[in-house]
Image (cartoon, rainbow, N blue to C red; front, top):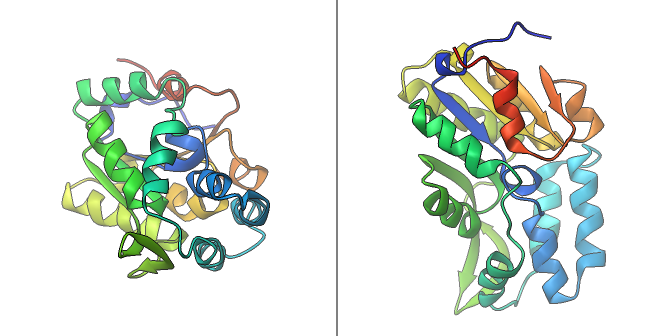
Length: 219
């Protein structure tokens, strides 16, 4: 257990989206509305446990969305996307201290961009789902943002801000977050899979992102 540090010493906090900043797995909810949850959810779960490669899992899941109307994305956002308890309190305190926020997700940019605006986050990086003629094509546009990509993105923004690794915090729950968590000065597992909890500085078991604040001293 690392010595308790002042939160104000940090300059950047990176958060995963699905099952971290928000309570759901967005791809599973798309699948639910499309009537194919039983095909998609097991792939998501296996990837988060680290049993299958994330890029492979994303490719397989997105392929099942081929032909879906793009309006399903807005439906998922409106009907299913809820912030994790304490998320707004955590973000508000980070803003008060002048700490930059980065939402980094293997999910879709449709959701990360809306959450960035909703919460006033500084950065959001994710995968872009390909849409043509109002339909999902079943493919990701461009290179897939996987676990390695998350770590590289954190490093890139950290360097841009002139920060050291020790001035960064990362929060996540799944196996694809491990490299990002390792790239930060402090890695925090949030209601995470066992493979993640065993490799981080801290593990928060109870829902409530504001619990992150209790890991650091206020002064």
